[in-house]
Image (tube, rainbow, N blue to C red):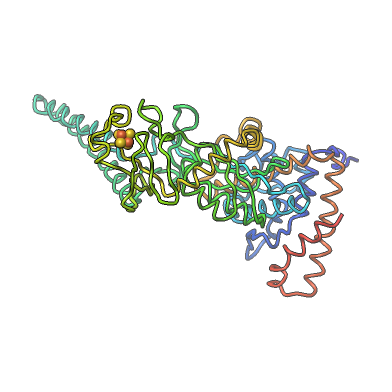
Length: 491
Ligand code: SF4
């Protein structure tokens, strides 16, 4: 006689996953059940979720590998009680529940906040890139399409020349086939061009339409996703995530506002690198009580040998600059759009015309003119904060970058198996749940962690039964989180 329980070590990952999933209010997270009209009942959501959480930590991400693990892996057999879902069942469960995975991750973050492991005082935001299920040759921009069409046109011209010089009928036929083949290829590229124009995007990916050409490492370009991640500084735990854009330029305020809303904070500090420094987003953060510490970008005029922008003194009250020759550079008040940035122009043509310092100041024949972003004040305040708190800003690297290393190097999350933004985020949410849970194993001893999870489990079950008796399903759903968070606070 053997017991499966003996095969699973007391501090094993499978046991932690088992206890963790028992703490989640699965019915309220929006997992979709597949109700067959006949035959055996569907697999329980908790079992499939346990399987995924176990697998994502152990390099078992593909549905086929997971299905195989259900047959041969003792811990998995123990974890899901010997069930053997097919690869197809696992794949569809992951594909159809992207919103529920997001809810589960966010619920977990709230649990961590209630356990006082997340304080929300300092959030660091950064991004990492992963490859998509889309080959580079299936990603096109206008330049690439033009290059292919030109190559085909050259080929066709070459064949037409050959056709003119060829007398043998057999060979003429062969050349005609080649021309037809090239024409078909050209038609294909014309269709892709049409799709690109209709999409109003700068690039199009054929296998995974949401994937974008991104720089994975220095000078290595591939098709993938740029994953944004917010981390709390108290225990370096993940808080939120997103994807969509290929760089960080427009990610600061959406990520920061989302974290603030999720954690229900009145104020918080955000640490980000240079890529996130844009006046507009820093301004939005400031207006929403979020203090940014975003590495300042060097001004574009700094390396051209002419007078640096810092020498020009700005008068905030009267909105003008004083130049090194002590002249006033004024604006007409118009706001211009420059590369999607809103700027005002400041100049004094008359003074520049006869200025002795002109050679050191400008090469523009109309004299020096300054472009000032309408968000310049927010940018300058941010710079002052970073310059006066260098040690605090340096925390950023410690708070975010280690996690990315773990996800990518240790757990192999350098590529996604899914297609489409929503589904890719399912994998990200699973990975982040696994990371946070694994991090708890370092913060607490295995026994402490198990006791905490068991305590949560007991309270949630009690609560569930209580509310199921007294409220309608709708009322239960709306009250669950509030009451749940009170219960979590109990020792
Ligand atoms: S060139 Fe114009 S802006 Fe520059 S120092 Fe002379 S007056 Fe001032």
